[in-house]
Image (cartoon, rainbow, N blue to C red; front, top):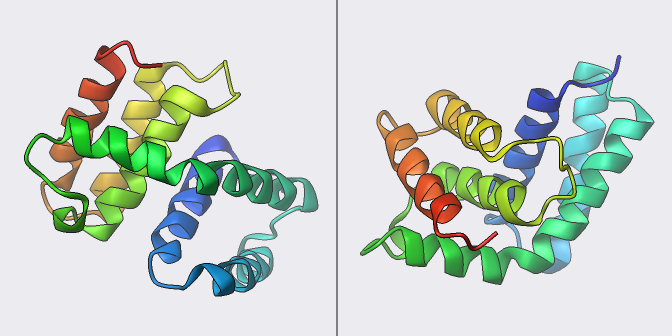
Length: 143
């Protein structure tokens, strides 16, 4: 069963969240473990797995640049003060708004999806923070 776009975003978010807890040299192994589990639980198809792996391979090298944009847009909040779930969601949102090849995903949809992920996985009012930061980034013209 092919994953829908929301399910793929959820996998990408979970992998980005997980990345903060493992050293770089162990991350690929942890990604494989996660995707193997997803395959068992969600019947992850090979093409979905390849897509997720390729997106993560594009996102990870961009993290320093993405983090700079988040820090600039989040005003007085340093990255280490942002909750890990919200940070991972913001990273994915910035990637989709600025860097992703998926031209068919409008900025508003990327922000709405990030807010939904924040409602599901973030802190109680984390969705408002995610919405504000991504809205600021999307309106700066830095796309």
